[in-house]
Image (cartoon, rainbow, N blue to C red; front, side, top):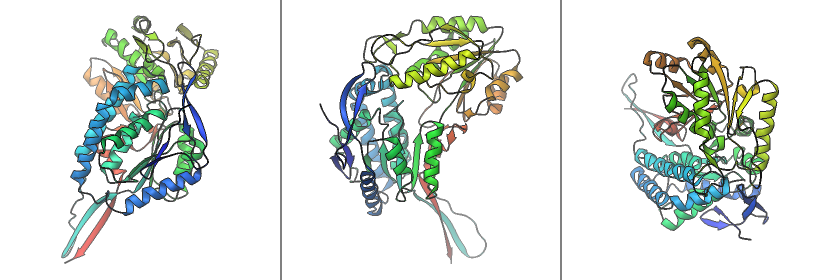
Length: 478
């Protein structure tokens, strides 16, 4: 069986103890390859190399425009290898090739965006009393650890790697133990393209999240931790990081609501609602898993959603015409089905789906459940699977109350042609992102940020650079 290696200190290497885990194709259950299971000593070696690269100043003090040129080379190499990387990701994650290709190209776009910002990280001069000059510098945060999830294995890695490198930080990326292959393959492409990164600036370490993720989060040599994951993992990482007062960016869960009014374009809304919950088999933090729809158009919209998703073929991600791939693992599918059953015991009616797909793999039917009340777990808990819960409302105030009745606040959608209503709801919804008359949508230049239990900090946009830089104030008596 083939074996992968980690990338530490500019070299491809096995783990210290020679331990491996198996990377599988969730669509078939077959093992693809073996991947190193790093030890804590491997983490120490990684952090040491990252700190050496930081202290050498070759990267952090490099002309920022030159750092930008290197990021542009990385973007070009990513675009060039996108189809190859998408195939690897589809086979390791279960998602469709179409989705994987789109996400990897988005990752390349993110590298391009932050390449352009690398020489625009500026301080300021500050008027102070007396004969003095006072100014600020924005300098690299330092060694950054990036704990990457399994649902968008390469795109979400690049989302944080790009601003970290643009800021002059060094990077240690740890992919999820289920889905390490696309990030490892991407790292090989960067090495082959000879983009110009000094040794130790960018490393990829693989292994258990509980062991390696915790070791990175609690390591005194790490200056910042970035995690995309679930709320329990976020709490654990934050607790570990607190031992050294290490700052964190946490992009956690969601329970997005699409609020649909009678004046909305229902045909278009139905397509977007399906895209927002059934893309990636629903395994998305920003999934629109709640449909809050006005009673006057409830039946019409539900029928349109069911009709639309009935056209979406379920199957292996590399197969022709497939729109819904496999869930990432059979154990995860079991969790989704268990949560669905608990919710149904509290009320609601399945109007389509609701079952595992027979045969090999971790496939599940697209599921729509109507009659869900605000106290139902299907309304409140993140299932992280292809399950849409539907709730009626009669007044705008009721719709707002229902949407805000959540511990999460990541992305919510509003569907109406009344711009006054749309802007008022956008103001009053308790979430970091609002999308009006489309869902879901984001860009490298727009903030990806959650309120409440959806996280701490900002990914994407120029605001992300604030995390990866620290402010120094300089005062001069003239």
